[in-house]
Image (cartoon, rainbow, N blue to C red):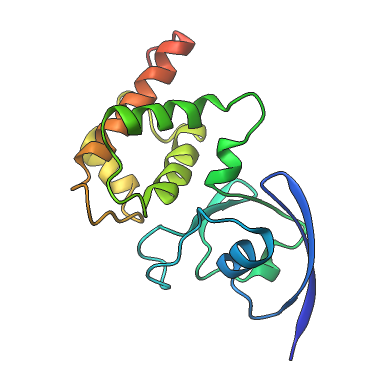
Length: 170
């Protein structure tokens, strides 16, 4: 059996492990690192429940080999929440999700948080983004409970709150 030594930074913590070459990132994160926010659901990159950031870019950890994060950084919803100085994007998203009741069963929520954080951080989601555009941006994240409207409202509210806090309104 093929094995490899993996050295990565997961949620700000250095991690080194010997793993089977075919180990999926979601399994490595859950079994070796103790991450619980990356959730297995579809195993085919459709639902977004397993979304994480690898070197700042979103990936579906259910279809991403763990060996491919060697010498890279991995951030999950837990990691975003724990960023130094209470990351304003994550805080705004968390508050908006509560305010707009954008969580029902909660299974998909960490994946949405990771994706929305990436979209806001990268400037892809602005106060001018329409709900239709936002639906397109979030097409890789599925929610079976909310009907999406509370999630879209929460995302828009978070972007608005961040713009207001910066005083840019844009």
